[in-house]
Structure formats: structure tokens, C-alpha cells
Image 1 (tube, rainbow, N blue to C red):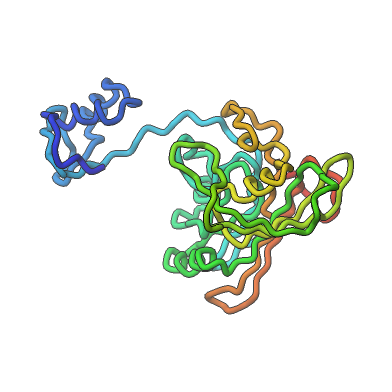
Image 2 (tube, rainbow, N blue to C red):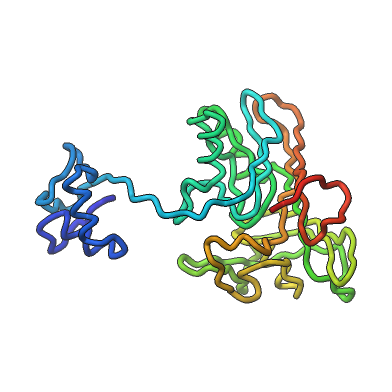
Length: 293
């Protein structure tokens, strides 16, 4: 944390009390007594003076996390890559209130791979394929594949069936996600997102769709299906934001990262990985063998 260039605080402690209201003053005092807040010259004491523009370091307390009661399946592992089938509700990497209950932390711990790093990320509520890199020096090469849109991504989704919607179709729009706002939204302007949507089959008022995104905006697939009037089954954000308890693992979002296909930047080989999971709202679909939740 960088301290402001100016301010009225006499001590680092006083600044932290004002800056981190979610952290009780008593907790800050305890961290200072225990030497858990460190400056460039070492641990800071309770009376350490505020230094404008200085830097301090500390590990925040881990939140109490509800254990995610679903397994993480390894589909592929070689000297360079690890590909897993992630369940719904498990975040890819630590963020916010999710630290221990994330795919990265589980894999580092369970497989003994402390240097493992993600090549890309998948939303916590979305199940399916996530790719990790075993060697830090190769991470950039694989991340560049995703950054440069050289990975063909294929998703499955279950959403209402509307016979009036012509399929297949391509949706292009401008999606904006503002900090602190849960849901993204479409705004007028130059499109920055594109998704091809194909109807695979339908029954009982529901459709199973293949989604092929060309871009990777936040919540893009969810926003695009919602804009067509067919929001994905189990979506807690679109069209209406609904609160969900941290330990509520029922009715998962019916969105699955089904396939990843790309030319390996190291070996030059063409690679394709496919999820074995199933979307619960389409449990009779062919070509699946394991539940997504």
C-alpha cells in the first residue's frame, strides 16, 4: 500500500484506521504489535510515524469462506499445461472474499505445484475448462494466446427457447462494466463485444445453445442472451440482481465453458480440450458424462 503524498495523520496507525474502515482499529493495533505491518526498514510499531508517499506491506486476514462442495477434475497434464474441469461456484483465482476456496489454491496445494499460474480466468459461477501453466517462464506465451484472441472458445448454455428468434445469429454490442456495480450493461456506441449464438436443440420451453465468443468482455455471454430476452437459467444478475447467500450452492448458472482449441505456442501442435461436465437443466443431453455442479 502506498501512503498518500499529504495528509493530517501523525502515525501509520491513524491513517490505516481512516483508510480501512472495514478493519477494526483493535485489529490494526494487534497487527502492529505483532509486527505484521512492514515498512522498507522492517516491521512497524504502534507509534510508527506517517511518511507521505511511503510504502507499507501486510497480509490481510483471510475471510471465513464457505467450502465449495464440488470437485475439481484434472483433464490434462503435461510438462507445460494443466487443464481442469471447474465446477460452478469455485473462483479461478483469489479475489475478494474467495481465497482458499479457489481453483488455483486448491491445485497448488493438492498437486504440490506452488508455481502454478492461470493462463486465463473463468467466472466463479461458470463451470468448465480452465487452463493453467506449470512453468512461470511460459505463462506469457499462453496468456498472449487469450489476449490476442487466438483461442477458439465454445460454451454451452441453457436458456428459454423463443421460436420467434432466428438462429443462428451474431450479436454485437458495446458492453460497459463500472467498478462497484455488479451487472454490466449495454450502451450506445462502437461495439466492443461479439458472440455467435447457435441453437443446438430445444424441449419443454428451454433451448440448449452453443455460444462462440470472439471477444471476452465481462459477463459478455450473459449480457448478450439477456439482451435477446432469453437470460441464462440460474443467472442472479440478468435481468434482475438477486442476492444469494455465500453457502447457497443450489440452482447454478447454466453456463459451461465447453471447449478450448488453439495452436500451442511452444510445441506448434494443434490442441483441443473438451469439458466432461453436464448442465443440470439439460441432464439428458448427449456427449456429457459428469454433472457440472
